[in-house]
Image (tube, rainbow, N blue to C red; front, top):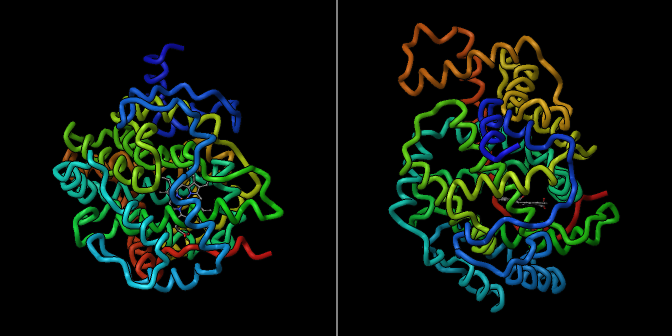
Length: 403
Ligand code: HEM
């Protein structure tokens, strides 16, 4: 199928839709890296396959911290390091300080005007983005075998509520109005996450359950990245959310900067949406599929979602149906999200109507009454995570999942 007709199928099949079509028949299969670095922020590159590239700067830092036993003290010192413009606390080992000072610098290509615009966009489209990146991204990540297994066998896998709350800290930081302003915290959360990932690379290899080599390669991070902005943009387009070219560029930009701060090399960060979509189409299909760990994590996540969004009117079946709607039938099948024919039919008509109403495209009387149950579920979910995220902080782990 030509690229054009393939894209048409993806668009008409619905976003997820899009993810359904992406993975057909080819879960977890390695393919050669052919994405051209000419489409990257750097404009050129080494041509190295990102499957075999990790994080040259952060990995030795977290390894040294784990080996020296200094992680708890460094976590303690970094607990109150919260703002982008905040000087580092005294007392950090010199190599940690040097790493963070380097890692916290915005790339030379970061564009303040675009970042400000992205912040406004994140605000105006917050409900869609939180739903897509929170529920949708969560369900997609459990259908990425390497990620599902990494999460399951690392420390946070044993306490998914805390783990989700911690992950949402970065999600909300990216979406905040002051994300990359001096008083925001996106730089801090991304740099802390980079150290967490580096620690996981070291720790997981010691887990008796881990058989996958060094985890969290640059390719793995790109895969997850595409389940966030690329997926969200495709979904919003699919829902016919009006988005100006400037807004879409700005939204891509905030995620490009975030990828850089997470340690992704500029030669792998897509420069345009066209390049991002092409990279997504290349890296997602071979990296998605079912795992027993993914099924368990999905069940836990949906159980939490249902709990948070109670009263009883917003039930687990509704959460199942919403998740199925967001990820499409193939991923839903991999994740073993139960079928909910009644709710699924309702969401399929009610959600597009809600979007149209919110975008001022149809008047209130045309929104079915039942749609507000979904609207309420989404709001409660977002509120819950906003609150949860405030109760905890991102910390470098010292152990894998306790046996
Ligand atoms: C931890 C975000 C990619 C595996 C975290 C945390 C954040 C985060 C915010 C800190 C929360 C915590 O400590 O629990 C992201 C983002 C990614 C990405 C934005 C890509 C754009 C990946 C990938 C993998 C992965 C590709 C595995 C293949 C993990 C694990 C932990 C973690 C195992 C936590 C370990 C623990 O529970 O101790 N990630 N991540 N992440 N991430 Fe990622």
